[in-house]
Image 1 (cartoon, helix red, strand yellow):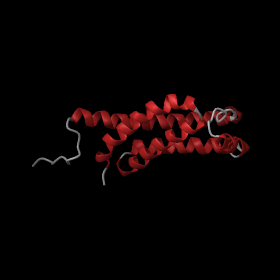
Image 2 (cartoon, one colour):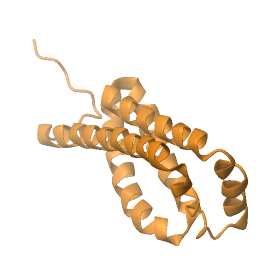
Image 3 (cartoon, helix red, strand yellow):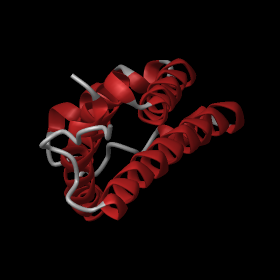
Image 4 (cartoon, one colour):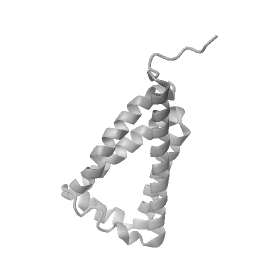
Length: 142
């Protein structure tokens, strides 16, 4: 007896493998970038000082300077832990990956608040992330 494929399964097995690979690559990337932030915190948390200076929303720059830069090591560790957690959720797969996909998409939307330069990275990344999340979602369980 053969196992029936759900209606939402990819039409071609290779497509399903590419989507699973995309989730693993994004997950690994976020674990890596979590490590980058840990390195920044350990080396010099003041490297975060100019991060928000190009924001087109004055409130974002003020909040960054008054909140994040009041304790950059602590907030840098929060960013590090957050990115690494999103990566682990994606790498774990299943229901957990749904939260990971939502998180990485929200993360990139948030990055766009920090200025037009971040749009150069975030817009193409979001096109890919939304495609990958939509393709992966049906395989992640109910």
